[in-house]
Image 1: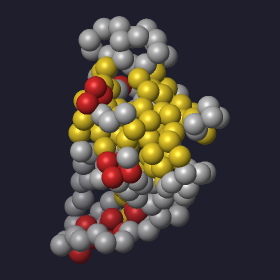
Image 2: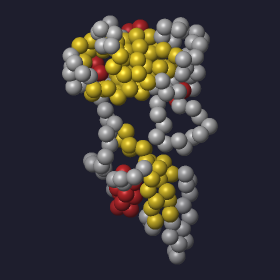
Image 3: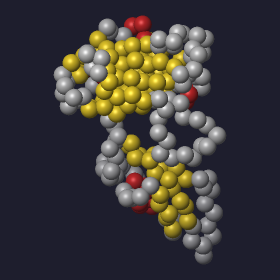
Image 4: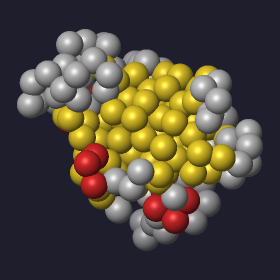
Amino acid sequence: MVFKSGDIPAVIPAELWKKGLDILGEIRNSKGDTYSIEAKKGDHLIFETFAARLDSPLDTVLVLRDKKGKLIAENDDTAQELDLDLCRRQTDSRLDVTFPADGVYSLSLRSRNTPGKKDHHYTLQIREPEPSVLAVSGTSVLDLNRFAVGRIKFYIQRNDGFNVMDNFIVNDRRLFQLLAAVCNAVSDCVDLADVC
């Protein structure tokens, strides 16, 4: 579901975030935006901002507190497991939280840089974890002749608890073997030979 920041309920109930929730907003002052989220003990949520990835100049910070103001989690810049793009700073934020108790929690989203312009927009995604894998190869073309063996190196980033390749449907046997090798790898780098 998608809401503009001004249209979101005063307290975001579980019925909304269980469906996956995107909040579209702009930060125009140093206080930023604050959202109240209803959660039960053991609920597991991902809070993730998309600003830099949407070409917004915002450098987001996420802070989650309980009703007494106790800090539960905080993130400035998402840790980059795969540093494949050294020229681009990752300034979006991400929290992976398992709630310690039932209650209403306060999530603040602010910017480390000076907001105030119309282009300081963001999308805040609130969702349950969705295991996924990102496999990236620096090789854009693999050229093989009938006697050659090709090698491709993949860098792997597992997200939200991804650990095995389940429920993939791939019609091409060779592509399935490639995906299985990459996704089920124990390390964060896989060097594949003779994959064709």
